Picture (spheres, rainbow, N blue to C red):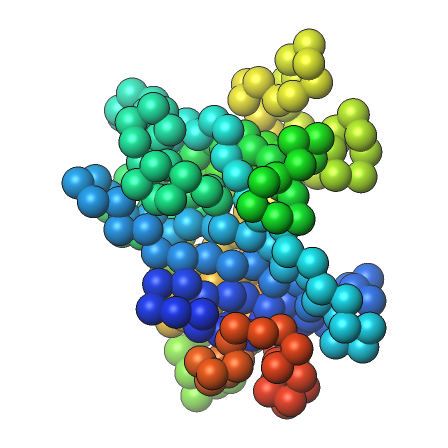
Length: 248
C-alpha cells in the first residue's frame, strides 16, 4: 500500500491510500483531516471528509462527515458531551474528533455517532458509529525500516470499533467487532468489541501498524510520500507525483 500526504492549507491535510488489497485500478481513498485549536479547551485532530477518486475514469466524490452525538471519557474522569460543551461548535460544527492533539499520558475513550453524505448536508440515511479507546504511547518495533534507521519508535495504541449502514441497510459491525444495538437499530455504545488496533507513531507515520484487536502488530509502513502544496487542492493534479511514490 502507498500512503501520500498532501497539504490543503495551514491547518488541513489529506492522506491518500492506494494499492490496497481489493482496491480498483487507479483508485484513491482519501481522508481529509484538520487541526482544531478549540479555544479555551484542548486541541483536536479532526476528520472532515472522505474523498474517492479514480485517476483512470476521473470519477470523484466527496463524503462530508457530520456528528450527531460525541462522548469523550478521559481515564478517571466523567464522560463529557462534546456537542453540549461547545467543542463541536468551536471546531466548525462539522466533521468528527479523531485524536487528542496533545497526548497527556492517560488513556481515553471517544464515541461518535454521525452521518455521511456527498455534500455538506449529509444524507441522514447513511449512518455510522465509531468507538475508539486510545492508550498512552509505548515502544513498538517497525519491521519495515531498513537497518540504517532505528526500528523502535513510540506510538499511541488505538482500539477501534466501527458500525455503518452504507452497504447493509440495517447496519453492520466491522468483523470481528460488535456491540449492543437499540430498538432503532443504532449502536447504544454498550458492550462494544473492537475489530482492530491501530498504532499512530512518531516520525510522521500515521497508520503505522495495524493488528488484530488483541494481537501483535502485523502491518507497517516504511514511509509516507509527501507531495508539494501546489498540487494538494485537486485530486486530478496528483497523477504524476503519486505515480512516482514508493510502495512500502
